[in-house]
Length: 289
Ligand SMILES: C[S@@+](CC[C@H](N)C(=O)[O-])C[C@H]1O[C@@H](n2cnc3c(N)ncnc32)[C@H](O)[C@@H]1O
Image (cartoon, rainbow, N blue to C red; front, top):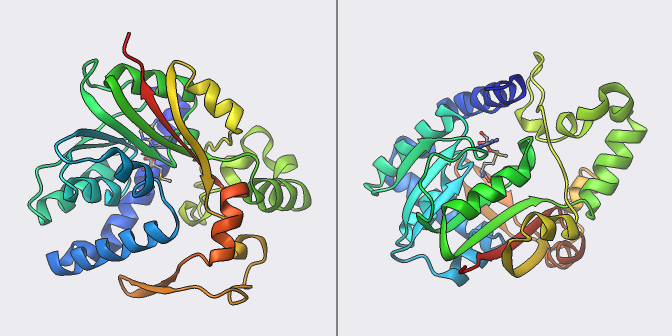
């Protein structure tokens, strides 16, 4: 494994290690089911690909691979919807958390450690491959899309979310504010965007996210040029990301998640998200040939 990949594995692995210890959702089946209900409700309000594209495909009886499962919520939701799920992640820590969640609910899902750039699965083995917020953190993103195509059955569906370049979050909060005004670009050079994102994961020691990239719709289409493209859309605009603290201008719903209340998006944010949100989602199909 090259040094950058090793650095990434350590960064995410340490983060999941800490989060796994603090994760109270696995304390009881009832609590976990309640949290999953809240997560599903938030995803529906935020127009997440986990519910939009995946529901449209229909998961019952399908072999689904998730790449970069993290704490496993999406994979568990797919399994509850009747899919035969294989959850995968670069880190053993995320795999262990996801495995514990499958076990808690008595679901038959599988969780394995795997690098998206070299998937350890045979050709043509899945009906659906899903990945959200992952493949922009790995050096060779094109290789991961080629791997998705290889492991998909002909006619199989890929649903992938990468960060959007033409978004308020990137252009204003990241590039203008953190990159130029606060000098991230000048301090960190090439890796400035990695260091400016996933802030909740950074520690006060010296652990900074090694890599994040952003994509335009055109670049996303280019990544998937060997597929039939079914849909390409954006979502996820959070007003407080632009003006921290300014939360209550538009009406929003509180959803109780774990020990805290989470604010859903307002309808204003949902509409802006469709034009300039940070999540760029593609739904593509592997061609029969
Ligand atoms: C921001 S988290 C997203 C987790 C989850 N998809 C979610 O939406 O909550 C990014 C995840 O991608 C994983 N990851 C990063 N590079 C990867 C790679 N090359 N192969 C597989 N997983 C990777 C990390 O270990 C981490 O769990």
